[in-house]
Length: 317
Image (tube, rainbow, N blue to C red):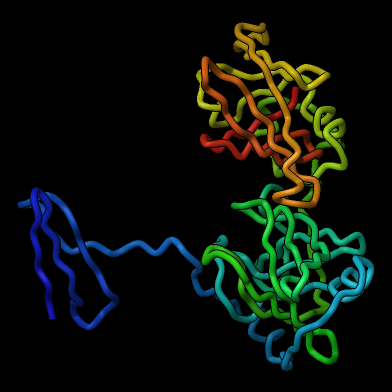
């Protein structure tokens, strides 16, 4: 079947060709053609042969209650291989390893082994949450693109099958995992924690990521100092930026590190809306122009993902 329409300067066609996936096109007259439609939501998670072997041990799950953060850690401190589900993630995503302190690292499959991915979007913290009237019982922190995801968690009777059930947008993780005793290989890290290596940080695999801060003072201390732009540049052509030690001013820097422009900075505590120590950094870039940052930091080497409109990444120097 086929539907054709026209209105003003637009024409379009919808249909199915050769019994395949739905396709469509909308465009200017004379340019009509079949092109694939785009799906920007969750996609089915691909499985390797290693994952299929681990997932053969899955058992039914049911809703669990985490009475405390410690209970959550004790339940999740395992290596979890994803077995089924959907998410908007890198196709190589193969699960999580959760450590005793609640931190998680994304797992990937390399041949017949598990390898840890590190850095922005690949590590963070599992945290317990509690909302009145039921609601969510789990938060995946530092999960991109939003910085966190609330979910409902289910576990099997033996505690070795985990279901993370998405409760919000269609971009979130909704999947079932199976625990495994397989070893995980972590890539070597040539830098020490807190190393300020400037542009060398741009291509480095960062680790020790955090997006939550105990106070505004803690965030201010992390921001303070000079940063090189790896990409994005906060929408400017400058080579870098410096934040004052009191968190109230910034200075754009040229390639030689000299200050060439400045403006005001103010930090807003958004914990009442987002919870869990989230802050927003406002950078005044012009008259009635403010750029909002919700930064994520890596300490090894020192690096910042600004999470601004320009997807800016900065390396401390």
